Length: 611
Ligand SMILES: Nc1ncnc2c1ncn2[C@@H]1O[C@H](COP(=O)(O)OP(=O)(O)OP(=O)(O)O)[C@@H](O)[C@H]1O
Image (cartoon, rainbow, N blue to C red; front, side, top):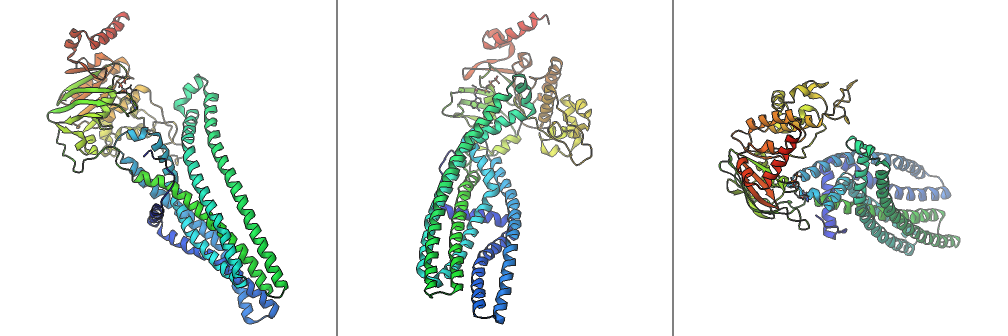
């Protein structure tokens, strides 16, 4: 996924055009049919105008007949179509664009949802590609369709006008056609360059978005104001914009120079042709109608050739961008999936880390260096250790958000890599250290823990009760339907939408715990710092509830407050990437190691405060 190549082989071009047309056909078949018919009709209209003009002009010179009158009427009808078709095409185009964008987004984010682990979301090149895929998936297919049928229509116009030129001078026809080839080649080079520029500026544009968020979101507003970061962040944001602008400016200059050169070249060819035909007409070789036809022909061929080149370039650029979309859609799984996944019966014996080594990438240091650890069925294991010891990493490996670099995580002896990741995850309930605050209603914030509970207020309230947050949520302006965000209204269509609220840190933590309570029937409960933001009373209360909740369940508890872990049947201390100590509280205190030192420090802190 980190491939930054820009370019497609002819086979890839055909396959991508097929994908884009297929996507459009599926999303908007009626609009596509109308658009193709309209494009081809629009292509024939200028040629029909030129030929009819010639006949009308010659008819005027030679005398008015009923046939001449019919030609005048036909010219007027063609004019009517010429006026109406572009507007109809624009309408159909917009219809197609909206329909295709919807289907493309659905497919893109279904593919993103299939990503098993987290590593891809930490790969800047993938994130750049995803950004372009989202952008090009919406408009890309339409541009490819525009390009493909625009080229077809353009070629139709070119051949029609070539016929006109041929009548007057075959040599001139060939010359004008040949003069279009450099235009086509130059436009192709430009389109490739523009696609590269888009790829090149995406990192700057993503960083610009980051600074924009820092400047305009409530989460960052406190620190930005207190630390006076506004000008600093604004400067950084504008620096990224300037870098992107500079790349686009270079591209625009290149395009301007190329197109000015091409325009001059076309003008010279057209001027030479005009002088030649005017001289020939003076010599009596051509009629007035011939001259009119020649002028329309040369302008038409050059205009249509330029339009074809432009369409080829736009289509080519759209294809190159569309490639990002196709690449994300067809990406190989980020973590290996077993061809025939093993069944995952209810946990009976326990979960084992067997000689697990792990680093986030080859460029990162080892976090775990041969961890051997067992979480026995029906028991609570507490994980302790200093900041950065690897406790949350153990949690991520358990949920298979990464695979061990070496060694294995076994569920009743079955390597979790052999199991369907979605099945494994249905067996786990978790409160992550960096749990999510969903900008949704209170009920939804809890209900996302188990989507089957979303329409079941009784279940949601029961979970909130147990997390000790029911009174708070029931007392909100709209009860459980209150939006837990002040950035969005719940229902903006109502005359006075209820105000959203920002829960306190501890309330949010209780909501995250309620979410985990919804999944109480799972085999494994993971609690990574579940009470870090709670006051002492709430912490005591929550731990009592969690203890009751965990009774008989298999659980992994991480907490820096060692008072909260002392009751765990087994306490495991991670240090230096290995299990440095393990045992129950008394054994570890007696051993006088890392745990005893940390516990002693915390206990002394409380004693010194006279508690
Ligand atoms: N996604 C990541 N990519 C690279 N390194 C990471 C990533 N996540 C964590 N690390 C590194 O791995 C090490 C272990 O981190 P981890 O979060 O597992 O520690 P922890 O024991 O949970 O710490 P804490 O007590 O501070 O929560 C740290 O050095 C951290 O910088």
